[in-house]
Amino acid sequence: MPLKQYQQKRNFERTPEPKGKLLKTGKNRFVVQEHWAAHHHFDFRLEAEGELKSWAIPKEVPEKKGVKRLAVQTENHPVDYLDFKGKIPRGFYGAGIVKIFDKGKYELKDKNKDRIIFKLKGKKLKGDYCLVKTRKNKQWLIFKL
Ligand code: MN
Image (cartoon, rainbow, N blue to C red; front, side, top):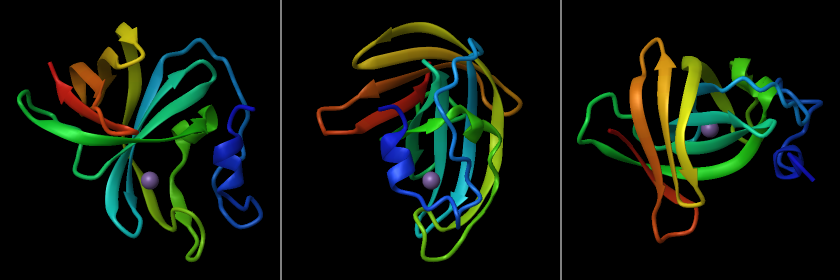
């Protein structure tokens, strides 16, 4: 069931986050959210197959070539999350402030189960990027090409 993991982690009577549903729009959008949770990080999300494929990046999305950053895959989020910003209340999953760092469209260039190559067309993030799986479970690297 799509989004089951996302929905199980949250209490929608308390969090302002969208409950969401599978929504195939055919638009290739992305968002990067800056999240002041227990550990400050960035959430990188790519719209695909009616959901947002998601990674938590403990440092930042590289804006220069030659910088590789860890990106830990997290549960798929609903497409409605593209616009989410706000405060997740204390005591709940992901508690803390969420702001939109950047958003826009992307162009998929190549994809297999271990690697995604895409061009970001954001306000801050622009250009060709690669996300590649490492040998560790859920751990990917993101870098600019
Ligand atoms: Mn987060």
